[in-house]
Length: 185
Image (cartoon, rainbow, N blue to C red; front, side, top):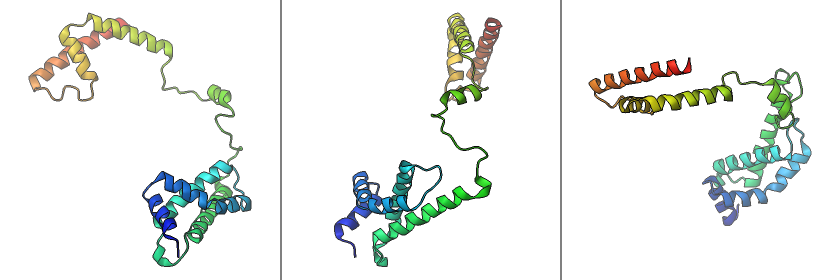
């Protein structure tokens, strides 16, 4: 049977109370430490295993039923051991073994920056040219064209306007587009 204060900690943890969670994790950390010494998972460091243990503790607190007459420590221990076995199984599966060893982006930041390029991103020079052209365009537009330009770039667009006003906005925006094409080319 659990003491009332520990049962209340478990309930508060299940309700996402961070202080109760931290206190409960501290109380059951010896179980985590025991499994960290007992099992090795390739690619996981101590912080990764602590994070896995925190997730298991939270799930265990959410699913714990005191009426089943099982202590929370035993329940958490079994859940954590099963999670570690899952991680070991997944890690050791032959079809998931990488061809090359895994490395972090932070360790080889310059190597990855040189090898991985975002082809969809525009160059800073192109962005400056387009920005300058848009500023010139905006200053050369009439008030109606400026309104059309702003409406077309807004989230709702011109859908809230009546059909006659919509047609005027579309025509004004087309004039803006032609001016922009003439400016950029």
